[in-house]
Amino acid sequence: RDKDKDNIIRMLLESSSAQETFSVVCIVGIGGMGKTTLAQYVFSDGRVKSHFDLMIWVCVPQSLTAKEVMRNMVAFATDGTDLQGGMLQPPFATDDTHLQGRMLQLRCHFQRQITNKKFLLVLDNVWNHELLSLQWQDLVDLIGFGTPGSRVLATTRSVRVCQTMG
Image 1 (cartoon, rainbow, N blue to C red):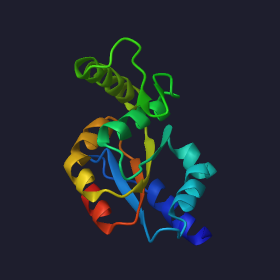
Image 2 (image 1 turned 135 degrees about the vertical axis):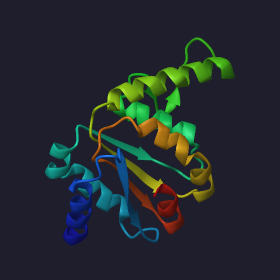
Image 3 (image 1 turned 30 degrees about the horizontal axis):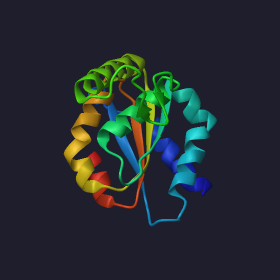
C-alpha cells in the first residue's frame, strides 16, 4: 500500500503543462479493494497538504447528480457556510428560479475560492459513467479557475469514468 500511495503522490505533485489548469489521476479497482482508503492516505499526507492551497473531498454516490456534486464541492471549499449536508438551504424559496439563482451565487463563490489557487479535488466513488459523460464539462467549467498544477483524484470501479475525465 505504501508503494501505491507514493506513486499517486508523485503523480499529484509532478509538474504539469502551463496551459493545463488541472489534470486527473484515477484509482481504479473492484469494490472493496481499498480505493477510498488509499485516497484518504494520500489526502492526509503532509507532502500533499503542503503542496496544495485548497483541498476538497466529495463523495459521489451512484444517484448523485452533477449539481449535487457541485453543491458538495462548494460546501467543502467554503467550510459548509452556505450548505448543510450537501443540500441547499434556501430560507426564502424552493422554486426552481430561486434555486437556480442561489446555485449561480454558490458557483461564483466557489470559483472565487479556487481562483489563483492550486487545488486537489477528490471525487470519491464515481460510478455513473453515463451521467459523468453528460455533465463532466459542467464540472470542468466550475473547476477551471484554479492555477496550473491543480489535480482531480478520482476513485472508481470503471475505466470508462477515467477515460471520460481525461
